[in-house]
Amino acid sequence: MAPWILHLDFDAFFASVEQLRNPRLSGRPIAVGRGVVASASYEARASGIRAGMACARALRLCPRLVIVPPRGEIYRAVSEEAFELCRSYAPSVETYLDEADLDLTGTERLHGGHAGAARRIQAAIAKQTGLTVSAGLGANRMIAALAAKAAKPRGLGLIPHGDEEAFVARLPIEKLPGIGPARARALRKLNIAFAADLRGLERHMLADLFGAAGLVLFERCRGRDIGPCRRSEFPRAVSRQTDLAGLETNPDVLEARLRSLVEDAGRALRRLGLVCRTAAVTIEYLDGIRAAASHGLAEGARLDDTLFEAALCAYRRARRRAAAPRGLRVALHRLAPDTGTVQPTLDDRGDRALARHALMDAQDAVRNRFGGGALLSGRTFLLRTLELRPSGAP
Ligand code: DCP
Ligand code: CA
Ligand code: CA
View 1: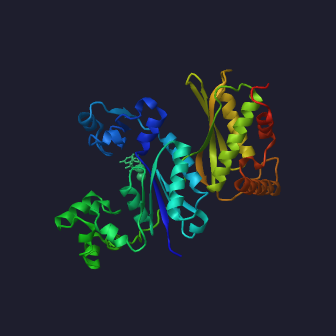
View 2: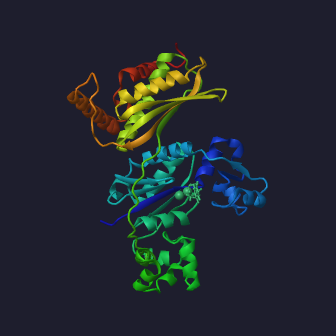
View 3: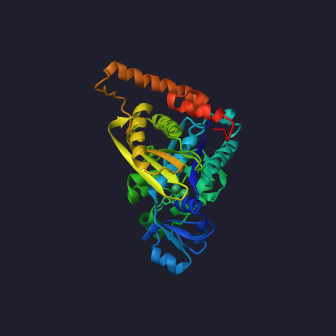
C-alpha cells in the first residue's frame, strides 16, 4: 500500500495563540519570548524578525513590536486539544510541540482522498482552536514536513509519489533535517548549496564528513527518509474547558459540569495511554479574575472517580467567591505512561480494582464510538435534565 503521511504544523504557533487570546495584539507585530524571540507573528516577520533573534535586536528592527512572555502550559493545552481531534482521522498520530504526523496510509477510501482529508482536518482545527495549521502530504515524514513548510502559512502542499527526489533537489541544504549551521558551513565551503549539489557526494564521502549522520543525509538529499522515527512525546497536560457565560451559580450544576470535564479529560488521558498525578482546576469570572487550585495524587490515576475526587478538592479550594463563573477548566498534569499496574486500595481488594478498570475501558469504548453523552454518570445526568428544560425556566 502506498504510504501517505500528513504533517501538520501550526503557523507562528506561540505568537498566534497570544494574538487569539488578546485581541489587542491581533494584526500587530508581536514576538513571544524572554530575551530571545521564540515565535514571531507574521506582522513581525515582515520587519525581518525571526525565532532565535535577541529581543533587543528585534525591537531595533521594529520599535512597535510587542514582546509577550511565553506561557507554555497554554500552548501545550492548545496543541494537545487540536491533535486529539486528529486521532479520529488516523490510527497512528505522533505529535511533537506544534507538529503532528498522521499516517493516512490506506485511509483514502474512508476519507475520499488524502487532500480532502487534510483540508477537513485543517478546517476542524481552525474551528476548534481559532488557529491555522499548514499541512503537507507525502510518502514519508520528511517529505510531508518539507511540503508543509513550503505551503506556509495556512496552505496544503502535496508531493506526488515519485516526485520526492525532484522536490528535495531544489531545496537549500539548510532545509534538510539534520543539517544545522555547522554542517551547512562545512558543506558551503565545498560549494554545496542545494540538495542537488549534495547528491554529487558519494556515500563514503558523506560518511567521512559526518559519520553515521552522513549516511542519513545521503538518503535524505534523495528524498528518502530513513532517520529514526521520533518517539511520540506525550503532552505535558490534558485539559478540557467549558464556557459558562456567567449564568450558573447552582453548586450541584457546577459540580456536574466539573464532572463532565473530568470525564472528557479522563477519556483523552486513557486514549493516550497515560496516567496523571495532579488535577488542576481554574475558575474564571466575568471580571477576568481567575482562581486556580490543584490537588496531587499519591499514585498515577486514570479512573474518572479518582480524577474527579482530586478535581473536586481543587475546585472547592479555588471556589472562594459566590459569583457565577464565566468558564471552568480542568487540567490533568504530571503525566506518565500507564504501565497497567492496578493498585488495590485499602477498601478495595485487587480483583475489585481490576474490575473497575475494566469497566472504565468498556465505558470508554462506548463513549468513543457514540460520543461523550452516550453514557452518563450520576453527576452528569443532572446536566441532561437541565438541558431538556426550556431555556430560561427555573
Ligand atoms: N520555539 C522556540 N524557540 C525556537 C523555535 C521555536 O521556543 N528557537 C517555539 C515557539 C514556536 C514553536 O516552538 O511558536 C514552534 O516552532 P516553529 O519552528 O514551528 O515556529 P512557529 O510555529 O512560531 O512558526 P512557523 O509558522 O514558521 O511554523
Ligand atoms: Ca509552527
Ligand atoms: Ca514546528
